[in-house]
Image (tube, rainbow, N blue to C red; front, side, top):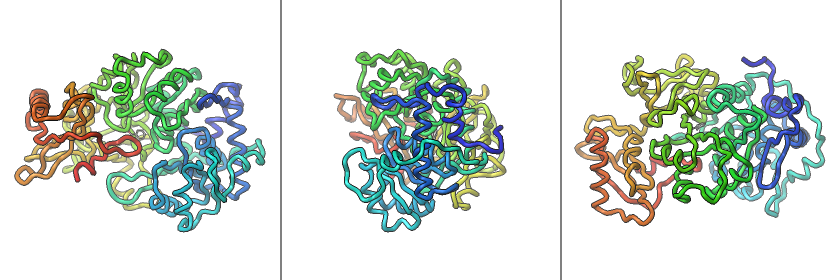
Length: 514
Ligand code: 3SK
């Protein structure tokens, strides 16, 4: 429950200064540390600069940066003056920016100079944009406003706007598997609620914690992990720009990261790059890891525990739900073969898509979720109607609920392979193929087949020094047949040098299917 009038930035920044935590470190970035008091001043200057440009309550502001302090400061500033922050993925091209900015009717763009090209290319078609503010960090020439010039000239004093809890604060565009991107909208209340449910109960953060990792800030997962969660609890965030596995470990050592946030691909890269563990780095500060974005396999969980000494808490969330709604509630209860329980504050049920009735325990069906966040799109009523029914959101995942209440991930609704009438969840087969010592990475999808409708096909990246040949295909197939119901074995195996991935690390299954 939140008061009717609440402002996220007031809660994430100003409250700590008011309550005597102004000297706590809020942000670590490279060699720089920013205390809560300094963060407040920088946010205030940016908020005033935006107001001076004419940004008003409710206006949408596109924010385009790698993971560094400026996007965090800008989003908090936009929210403090009652606007709606729209962090956008770095790799978006002019065509995508055109659609997003025009759909959102954004008035202002704040951009890292190295990402300006695509903005400039799109700009003549951006109907509502009045100002572009450029953070000059790489000496790139431009004819827009300069971030430092505007903020240096602006006042360091700013009262938070009198926003209401259900006013919009954040909009994140998500492409999903098909169609035009959709703006997932979130209010001040919902942003705080992700911290007060998942983070509070599953991570139990304290002021001493340092959250760090490499999910991009425009990814809902990254925004929660690296902005909302640490700042809600007066803790610190460690930002690492364009982090490779080595960069991330350097940040763990230098900034004393305690909560490591990432995705399975990156955890696997860390394991592959440092097969004997992170010996070159001091990672003794770590206390827990968070994993989301893709299902975490038991193999990765076990290897990471062995090499890094921490358990990874797997969780499932979506951009629309803003953060994780199913996870184990603490590391002590983790069973790596399941995703976990509904996060405190959320309820889940499993629905048979054919009958609309609740499934029996153990039976797979569509996951429905209800809680303090829910699916809501900007101006797309037709998508809204597909995704929400009687207050229950349908994120599009297939789960089964075990007798003990744990929820077991099966697949995305569109990753279910239907072969000779059998429903086969691709990720379940992936987890088994990945157990083979000669396999580094794998993605399993359905391939069209005349007699069977579809067959299970595995795209495999072999471990370093291993050649993919017929013998290995047979070994992989036998391993699956011996571990799962034999109809789930991959009838086709193709060796590839890498898997196609999205900017947030998700495998592009659609591309593999095609
Ligand atoms: O992809 C996920 O699992 C996720 C988790 C938390 C927040 C947002 C997303 C998309």
